[in-house]
Image (cartoon, rainbow, N blue to C red; front, side, top):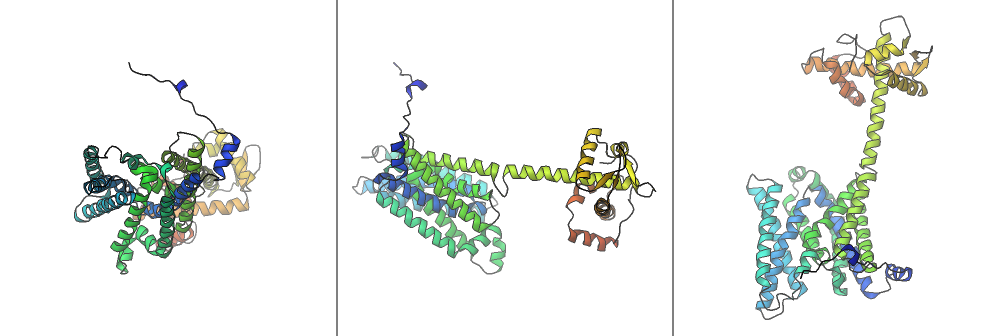
Length: 451
């Protein structure tokens, strides 16, 4: 008879306030060990993961973590063959590190000696070595002590089994990675952004790349016991990717990634200790994912919310500039000083309501003033701004006609796309190239609706 379970069978007991404080204040020895270890691991992962993300080697960590599986199994089989039980953590980690380095070297070799790109090399190494590891794991379970070796803990992680020596190793790793980051900050930065320049200056970029990937391998191997090889890449990549939304500075990104990694480790360990049967590794990764989602939406540098606000502001600015240019061109060459709402609607093919809203914005900004119920004219400030906008627009039109071979009947739309972002230096270059230092006539007829 097959046993069935329903959601009603699942019971999650929430802790009392005293139990919660007991965990948060780290009053229990085992909780202190786990929290200290995962926080140190989060710090190291955030720092080295920043350079990995900037180097565009995020998937390399995934290949490296999967490549450690055959190393772990071979090390276990070797220790069992020598008469041991194969449970030596140091021996298993050494095997993982060796095969992790082999995986990285294979990726570099494929990328350097063939026409294949990084993604293809990573896919090949990841799948082949992980497949080898699965096959060896099946063989290892048939050996004496194979089923009790706890090898599956390295696949999915088991932070709750962390002891003081493991925490000391992780703290030492965090200190070592921090020192390497501080001493090689300039070199790693050049390697990430312009390795060709570094090579031309005589820098040993291949050696620096090897050092960086070795640090990645060390962090990945140490992370195996906490989050497992399946999730190790998340701890390396997500904090750094999250930090990228908050800053455009490498130094600030390093600090932000380290803070996110530390907070994720601390919160994950606390939640796992407070709520029974919640695995530490996966919850740490889920909290990292929460920080990423938060950064993706609210990031101060390139978050979705800020980008959307900037897009709205730019669109409003462009619409206002189009209005001023339309008014300038409507009165250009005539004796009249004001234009009607209907003439603007006819020229721009906008709706009456849209034009009225733009006119109110322009009036509030001091660009125009009303001369009647539906008539408006440019103020001195608005006339100066409209003059600048029209001048930039026509300079770009003339440039496109003379140097890009665009027909005058089609140039207006193309100029509309670029006129709003022409900087002062670009305008000066166009003036010098076209030998114009004042406003010029439009190279196409102004009558009718424009884009």
